[in-house]
Amino acid sequence: MVLTIEPAWATHSDEPNRSRTAQRLAIRRATLPLLIQRGYDAVTIEDIIGIAGISRRTFFRLFGGKDQLVSCDHEVYHREMHTYLLQHQGQRSIGRAARGAALIVDSLTAVREDSLERAALLASSSALSAEENRWFDRHQTTIASFLTDHTNLRTTIQAEMTAAAIITGARIAMRDYLQHPDISAPTRFKEATASLTRYQSDAIRQVAVVETSLPLDEILARINNP
Image 1 (cartoon, rainbow, N blue to C red):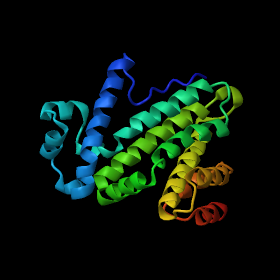
Image 2 (tube, one colour):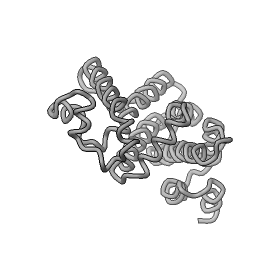
Image 3 (cartoon, rainbow, N blue to C red):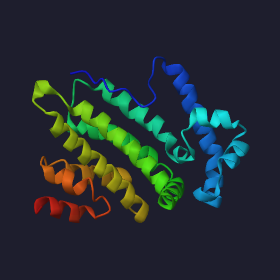
């Protein structure tokens, strides 16, 4: 089975979309300090187009709304993961899928100060948080597509559960990295993913995916005793 899911930026030609991504990231860079300084709710679209030096029409050509500003960098991370998974279609293992997701973890935790500022912004707005969650849903869908391989009798639902476990591990790793300066995000991701992907039952969907605010040990305890 070929990995056919299109990355979030894909249409008929990739080059115009790469340019669009670059424009979105440039506006994000220009606007992020203002969002951090004033807070999401206090910054208007007029503020954004003023500091970015663009027209209102250009803004709405590039964004559906200001809630997409903070998380638009996920376009790049998704492309990197998707490219990695395409290169390893002959090895559709959980390990390969996890290494693809690790690229996203590495990008989101590369600079601790940036990670903390991002987390604070996301926590300040339900709209920003929802947009971030939508991106993780897209990452999960791509991983599930990669893992679905009917020739090896791995069903779609098994792939979806495993992908959910991997993305849950990524979010646990990022959360713990932000809360504890001595924690290594890549190491924590490996630990969490190794623990969560052992379970191939509905428990992983009912507990781990929904309750990533819980400590990993408690998540595992609930999976073992649903």
